[in-house]
Length: 171
Image (cartoon, rainbow, N blue to C red):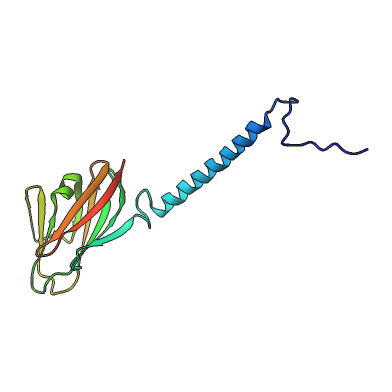
């Protein structure tokens, strides 16, 4: 006598009523949901939503005298680092202006090295460091975005074209 083989994909009424057509649809939905969640985790780890390889970028002016390293995507109310690399003329002080757009949307937490002279005018901040003997100078700025949204910020080195960066700040 042959053993009876049960078709696992056939609808049944005993012991529980099942409509296998809907069960198969649910399994497919589960599979795609799992794939989407895994994709979201991988994108997060790569930095699509802030701080990571895909979010890190560098912007510079055409002459290459000012280079700004920053994140494309940030989080509101979290500290974000900016590295500014300056190549200024020998014997000239370094004068950097943080534009109104940056000053209105970010709160500066730290700035290293400290500038020799600092003054604000028309919502801009002008920072001056002593002459750097023709060497590249690095400035480290930590700022905190005050709200979520899309921001465009301008950094300007005296006598050079400005560097404009575009960033998204997530809540």
